[in-house]
Length: 540
Image (cartoon, rainbow, N blue to C red; front, side, top):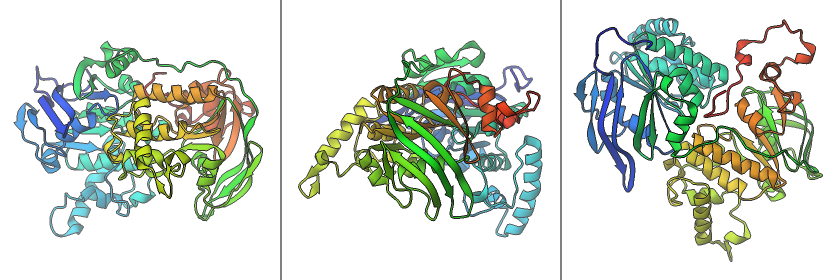
């Protein structure tokens, strides 16, 4: 196995024995046993809420187990806090980064690891060490750049550098590709292989079976707080892992009948947007969506898809200049100003790309979040006041139908896993039966069972005669769900294709801003654009 040390039967890098952890009545981890050999990449998979992140938070010292023992390099250790974990050689890169946005890269690297009261010597030493680490592990990043000015992919590099600077031999990554482009994910995998080959031990928490099969040496499966299997990756398959995760067979494809499109629901003509900084984000968008069809918007993140969804949803960026025309069922919609409420009343539902920023208020209860945007509906009114009992009952029913775990409307949104947060937003919007559903990155950070469920709901909405505008950076998701595909690049629609006629090479060219119809076959496509990704949790 790649990266295995030469000594016979070396002590495992990590051994967990009988780890249990409960939060009140919720048993997050139950008698977990796990062995991770040194110098390997070990995947941990499971549905949202299976207990993966809790287990790793125990290993990193964020939580203390109710029972059980942790061994690092064969030696028992009581990890009481994250500083103890760091001293034991453990580093963790969280799904939502722990960086100070207005600090530089260098300042973030040394934060909490200064040599003494004077910062200058710490910064000087860190600069040299940072350069060495960056060159050794392909983690180049400008040490003087502000975090807020870096792409998500480069911010993740900073998190990895922080751990390596603290001399981590064990690196835990929680859903590391959930916010990366396919090209950034490929680069991350090269980094992880390099770290493994240097003798580091990597634990990778992910929902994506393609990533497990591509990058890991071993994989452990968790379900409902318990460890149900640990196997060599080469001895298993995506279908077997999916069944272990969910406890039943899972379709790794979308089943749907041919679309039966009706009249136009949304018509967009000449839509242009210049943001408050003077950057042109949309450059004359024309598109139509008919009743009973899914129009998929493909493209690498950052090419105008976010701005398109925000304008159609009724909340364009403050200070942006807009031109063009939008019609819903033949009626003009206002371009300027925040008009999200009018959009909902007109029959537009919106599942935003960032559920935590735009889809939910994290400190509010699930029942409150289920009603947001629709709290003035007649069934929620009791004279001059809102009928909270009716809202709670409605939320409980939706959470049962959409298998939100735990199905407790009183819990704050922040206490649900990312996938269950997504289900709350999907339930709120889909069950309002909109004429047009806008949906961005529907399965980002969502497990295989929830992906299957969300996809079924979207196809059911289409089959009920509704129009769906789908934005996703996962090309296989676009191909699986869409009846027509439009490709965006640099704020433009580069071309439109039918899924059964499209090829990944053709779409990859369009995503890179190259029209295959006008490009010679020998013209090379940049590797970053050629990699177009796969459906979350699926293999290509």
